[in-house]
Structure formats: structure tokens, C-alpha cells
Length: 165
Image (cartoon, rainbow, N blue to C red; front, side, top):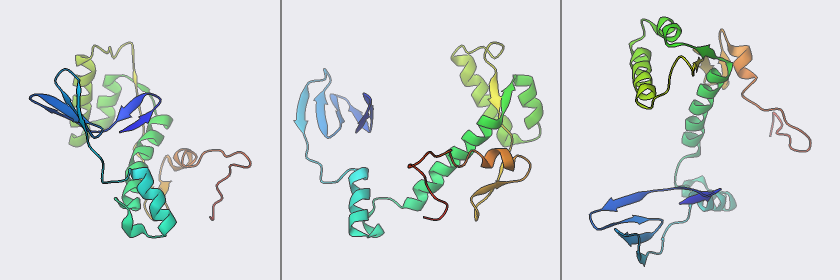
């Protein structure tokens, strides 16, 4: 498990008489029963070792897949950041006719209601539909100018990432 600012991320397996987490087995009261040695290096260690060996074949996972996964989240964030606060009626009107969006919106609304979040007090942001060109890795279309400004942050010397590396 990674530990960042006290937050742990990893896999916990609960069983009838206890659980395992972070290469350790515990009984149902939380008492440590056994520690297991890991035969694998962490993802971070694996990445550094692949760089040192100059061999992408030793990576646990494909770097491009990680890039594409992160890009999907960044695209959603770009839409959110250039969106505007909206009420449920405005959102329903904007997504009318798109069954997939309507289904997601209905699930989202149900989740908010179940957690006692009042739409009238807490409007949510509705971002625009964005088009993305995979080849150039740039937004294209109606909101491209605003969205493309969010792709790269504003750097300050000497921490600058140049266009051509």
C-alpha cells in the first residue's frame, strides 16, 4: 500500500476470521498474525528500474495505457473547469435525447439524494461536450480554445517543460 499524507491505498481482503492487507494477515480483532515477504517490487520501483535498464518490457503495465487513462480524467476535468453551475432542470434539458448521459445523470441524482445533498443549495457544474483529436492530443471544436489552455500549466523557471524534449 502507498502511504501519502496518512492515506493508504491498496487491497484489503476480508475473510471469515480476519483480513489481509499490505502483505500482512490479521485476525478479526486486528491482531497481526503473520507478515509475508513480497516477491514483487512496487510500481514506482518497477518504473525506475525499467528506466535504469532502458527496457520497457520489464514494466508491469504499459506506459501508454497509463497515459490514456490519465488523459481521460484530465479531459473530464477540463470540461468541468470550463462548465457552469446548473440546476437539475437545466442539465436534463441539455442532455435530453442522449440515453447514456440521461442514465448517468439519473444515477448521479439518486446518489446525491441518498447522501442528502440538496440540489437547490448545491448546484453542480455542467461542462460542455468536448471533442478531442487523438493524433495531436488537443481539443478541437466549439470549446477547444478554452479547453486547450488547461492542457499545460503555466511553468516558472527553472521548472519548465519544453515543447520538444
